Image 1 (cartoon, helix red, strand yellow):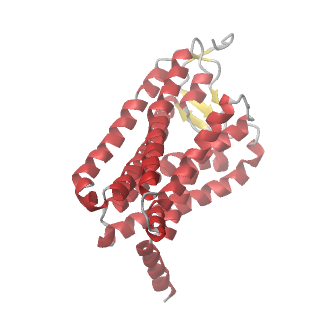
Image 2 (cartoon, rainbow, N blue to C red):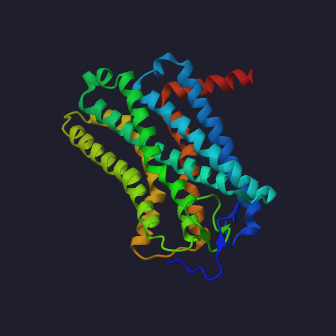
Length: 314
């Protein structure tokens, strides 16, 4: 039960605290946030442009990468501008309905990104286990179905969140000790029994990130089994190299989540500002790093980027 001796009715406006305890440093935090936003937008827009123009990249792996870039652009667009408003202009007020909208769309794009990473793991599985049938199995029709499944799963899992919060009638305060309208942050300031909300929050994690991570690990277990059956060391190295970029992205994407879950399981209570900073890494690091990793490891993309800089130099 939440303590509600001085409860308030459902407020028309919430106040986002930003990073509680570090308000005096908001200006400094805005610098890396802004730089991440600019680099992420430029990087992912460049990836999309290259894939669109370069016909040789119109194959499943790169079409899935284009899908990932679209999700990354959406993710930084719904998170960073609002945070910069808090850091630069102290624009902390957010209407109740705007809070519900943000509560839906931020985790929506995060869950979609997790789903795209699972689809990319399936792509690598087919490429290693069934190389001769790769183009047949991963047809454009299947890619469209996978994209729709990723979207439908995210919408189905996250639609209850704003509906449940809308039904909350009273709150302890109108101040959300967070940098955005996170579902659990709002639940923590609600009055009454919130056990059902906590269960729902855990179910979202299990049904999205937990489900995807399990099958990604399973896919790579089967990939490793297939690779180690290859007699040639050179062929093994080539097979591993095709998975390298995806493995790097998976590690960066899931590491903050795993760290937070392990910290809670082991009973380690982090300072609130540290927890918020780590939670923000969920949405900042992948959109920043994904285009850099694929740009550095993909020959066609490297050539296009060098060509762009060469033209600008001339």
